[in-house]
Length: 194
Image 1: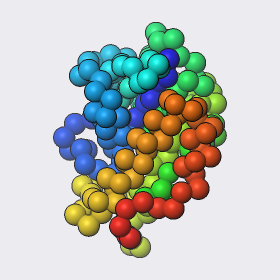
Image 2: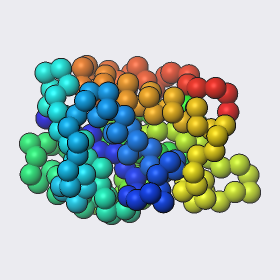
Image 3: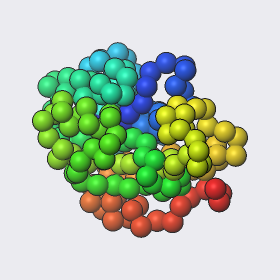
């Protein structure tokens, strides 16, 4: 089984913000593959379905970003999943909007959701997909950038980046994480120019 975990914050206040990119990727993947409606499980919302010959679970922790590790650790206690079968999807300001970065393992890079998962699992040896959201303009606070609604002119590029991440997850299922990493890390930015 594969487990794809999308990071974000629960509730309407945080919907349509760049910090919820992981949630949106999971929602788009579920819609693309017609997964059943999610239910509350593992301190998150969880659904499970088939993609080709593979069993895939989708988890969106509802603990708020900084405590995501509680939800992921709970899921790994009950599901037939090892950390290598996990793919965590989250926003990254240090990557331009329109681009992805896939890594098989690594540190948290200052991302509190990823830090919580590393602490919860006691390991950083799990694959992750960083969804580029870019940095805020000079003079703007990073927190405001992360938690503000995506503005009209940025929506098209953000949507294209989300679809790119869903395509990457499809390739993870079909060909494995390393093949997806080799394919998607070198792609030019998608969407209209920023």
